[in-house]
Image 1 (spheres, rainbow over the protein chains, first blue to last red):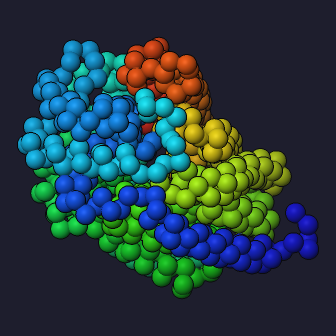
Image 2 (cartoon, rainbow over the protein chains, first blue to last red):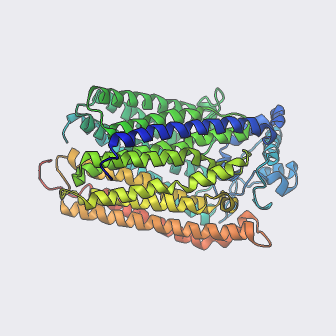
Image 3 (cartoon, each protein chain N blue to C red):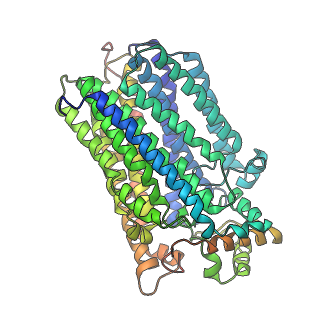
Length: 144
Length: 458
């Protein structure tokens, strides 16, 4: 690199450029926070089952096998649209409840978590909430 | 080794390599579970193996970064470390915390671990890569702050080079962004939005500063090129990193409920993210070509060049492959993502750590370089691991393309599990590539036990 372009010039561009794009990023974050109330179905959070369901989702590490809106592990199906795929919350609850404790020989199988009826209801309420989020028409089809 | 206190890096590097071995063993378990679904079920279900695999990776890379900082900061600052005793104490705290966390993952159900460790006070667990119990997260913060105090004090009392400055900004950024792991809103969209402030702004942001600083340090040492030239390159690379990478965060904001304007912003800026990696490749090769000395440590030079190439391929090319919103619409959350993740982490952060370890370990063991025999073994390990990761990536990419087609594009889309059965062949080939990787890693570990020459350190 040429002599005119010194290390201190490079350093100043680094600080200036970083600061500039950091401020743009923060401005876009502000704008995002203004827009998302129309997309994120936050009104559904007034149902305590949804909040409790999210906590169950987290404390059982569901993301360790599944994706949720495409993020997570790729070992088991997408769950952002599972309520729609299986047709109802009851179908989701039934599926979770029916997993064999010892698994299925040779095949992937979800562990049996021994959830109570109330816990199943909470998880299903959480997944229904996620299925209502406006995700710009993702996933491409119901298979997730 | 010019300063006695640099030696505190040694236990960090040894523990990093041990955790690396654990990471790969659990990776092989997971790879097998992809095709032999009930392997170790229900004792080690996939999600548990995955937590160990990814968390061991994160912890060993952090161990390596800390070791790298302890090694290179005294030499850059031209002064002894502020407190070598603190560095050793932090090492044991960090290692024991990581060990206990893994024991917790493996021995009690995750929900039990959560209630045992105070997750009810502040729920932070159960989010990808941030699965650590609250007390572990707290421990990470304490260790990180004490570590930063130690190296910042060292730099403040000594020479302030550009390499030290960039490294410090990277490490401070790492610690600050980690604080967002304590923020877990009920709103899933906001949860995901800020979760990326840890994950993306780490690996496609501040970690690249650490990587650049490590690479620059080793290149000065092995090539003898003027510091002035190398530091100018370093600033150019980290500038490119942050002006593309910060807004590049937008490529995670396409389909999670965030505004659709992110599709354009994310596509444009993340499409530019390969540029800093390409600059890094040019940098490494240029400096080695212009070398003013023949450093006896050929293996370290090989790792440095390898970092440049593999980081560009894994993070740059494989990232670009699925970063544009119209492409990502089909590839989001498939094996394509996994393919990219594997080569990017190996090429950028694993190889950067192995570069500094390769350079510094012989010096800490009292020799300028290892014996020829040990270096040959290390270079075999380089090629075995690197070729294996290329094949892992290619097979996962093949699986991913088929998955996208079968599950998302074809006229009659198949359910997830049916599509998985259809691509099982590629998962088998990935697993065998993983076995080759393990062989490479074992050769690597063995190379440390091959006697070195009795040559005094330069």
